[in-house]
Image (cartoon, rainbow, N blue to C red):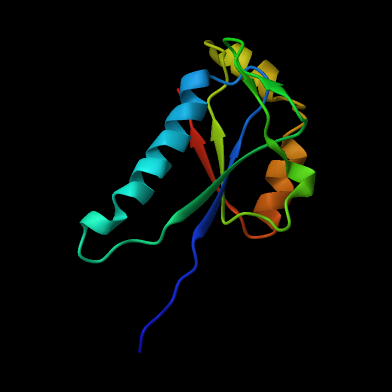
Length: 122
C-alpha cells in the first residue's frame, strides 16, 4: 500500500531584530533540501516554507526589511514553527528581549495546537 504524506508545513518566524543570517539560513537550507529530494532513492517529504510575522514589515538586526505573511492570516497552525536567532549577544540581552515578547502568544498557541517548535539559535 502506497502511503501519501503531504508536505511538512514550516513557518519561519521573522521578528524585528532577528539575525539576518539566522532567518535566511533556515529558508535556504529547507529550499536546498527540497531541491535535492529527487537525488535520493527514497525522497523525504517536501517542506512548504512560509515566512510569518506579527506585522506586515519586519526589520532584521542589520536592517533588512522582510514582508512576512501575517501569523494571524495563517489558515491553520504549521507542522513546525522555527524561530531564528535574535540579534543580541549576551545572555541578559536574550532574557530581556524574550521576556514579554509579542511572539510568545503565537509560540504558545502554536505548540498547544500541535505545532513542533525549533530554534535556529546562536
